[in-house]
Length: 379
Image (cartoon, rainbow, N blue to C red; front, top):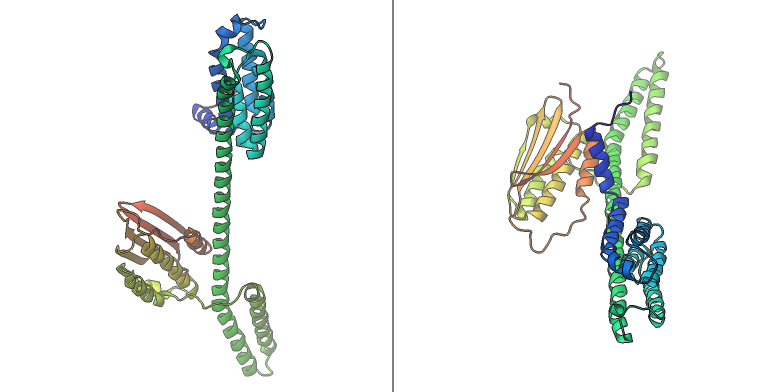
């Protein structure tokens, strides 16, 4: 016997649907239908061959086309013009003009509004136009034109807001991708500087051993080892150096004191605590620590100027922990700091590339950044 879906699963489906665009379209259709229902008694009494039931069905069918207003906004618009001529119903046209402005933009909305006014004026000139919708041309214009212009204008404004939000989201996404790419390049440069040195040492050491082994069975093995190290170094150059201009390698833990001093000169006191065990980290991991601390201190100086910053670097077993904490300012700095908002992405890319994690959060009136990564040291 098939099992009914559990209530939590059903609730999740309902929640997902409720936040979807289709749900908003259904709500708009129901809202339009509800407003038009107020006119049903008058429609049933009018000379249009409709009863209360048939008028309700006609209005329901017209309102149902609003469900398609995103893909086919001209369909509810055409239906609205038909309802306006047959039943003198002006509610539907407001939703239709808004939908065209919202989902097709300014030009389509202006065209639809002008066509609506022209068609409505044609209806006004035909016998049977109800007096409550304008007995004179001025009355007609004062009623019909504002309805169309206001609905279309609101739709155009919403369309422009959608464009702005979409462009802003694209800008943030592009900036994040750029930050991640730059951080990957920076990591690659550090790998080149640090690993390349070790490969050079390996090649030189193998050449020395080959000379010492002169004529012995292992001389050829040492020479092949030296050639392999040189080829590996060459491939490293081809892969990294040619993809980006070289810059200075990121300092290690010895550069943290200088960073703290620079931040203090900017007005933010820094309490720096570095565990002695951390000094045994590889140069690559020390470079990661330096980059994380540097970005945190920069952010603290920009967003919480003058407030103290605490930097703690500890080693717990095989894990390294970096924590940078600063109080949150009572009011935003004036003027507002200039920020691209990509520093967090850079730090996260640097840490995750080494198998670690990074968290940034508000905690007890302070902003806290915590990064953890393996030390790479034997426990």
